[in-house]
Amino acid sequence: MSEYLVEVKDLKQYFPIKVGFKKIPLKAVDGVSFSIKPGETLGLVGESGCGKTTVGRSLLRLYNPTGGEVLYNGEKVDEKSIKHMRKEMQMVFQDPYSSLNPRMTVEDIIGEPLDVHKLYSNRAERREKIMSLMELVGLNAEHATRYAHEFSGGQRQRIGIARALATDPKFIVCDEAVSALDVSIQAQVINMFEELQDKLGVAYLFIAHDLLVVHHISDRIAVMYLGRIVEIADSNELNDNPLHPYTQSLLSAVPYPDPKMAKERKRIVLEGDVPSPLHMPSGCAFRTRCRYATEKCAKECPALTDRGDGHMVACWNK
Image (cartoon, rainbow, N blue to C red):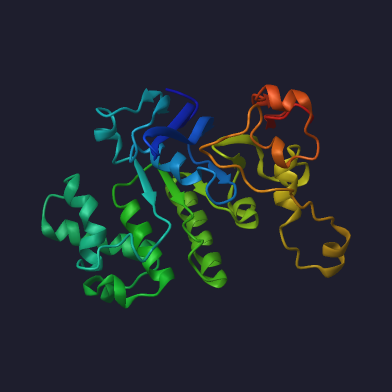
């Protein structure tokens, strides 16, 4: 048995894009590696379009990866093995409005994974499991016969979470699971994720672009930029001591509730625009917006290296 529940090694996901008469590979994910221990939460952050969701989907083989490998409990995840692993690896999708079937009742939505994996022996047991799942995520029994459009965003996301928990998974990919919700509802759902983790021992890959949310829920945080991970560290360590210029810039943009502290903090504004993933700059992808960029950055892409206590950074100048 491996020490890690999930290991991702040099994961690549390229999509062929037609430009004129030829096809160019769009490198959505380009050599991503990380690992997650049982019961741990790894936060994955970065700006929109950096490849966070693609990592989550490729990991669960909703997309077939172009390269690299994913191990679950030491076993390689491929087209054959995913069939028996699917039960233990689930996903909570970003949009609670489009991820639920409008023609199905809540009972049928939550019960669908039970039907697919044949996890009950009779109708009474199926209903009992659905009711206990609904109770687990804070829904009432009378909600079972209603349809998705009759619920608020927060309640819909709870239905999605109950569906993900139906097969008793050990690993859940939370793909921006709170970004479509109001701030007050976000707090409730995040607290629920933490309670479920304490109760069920489930591990999360928590994808988001809100650093405050990620810092609150994660044990470790990985920062992505244009398909690559540029920094991984313990949640508090990354917050207190960011080493990569991109991470420093992201953290400087986090709003602080204390006006005095907010005034003292210096905002690091990035120059220029995000390069197109179809025409990536040579060497380090971040160099076109980096204030520390040198000639070496243009020639060679830095690898993730350990700077002590598992604080990994991909930068020549830090």
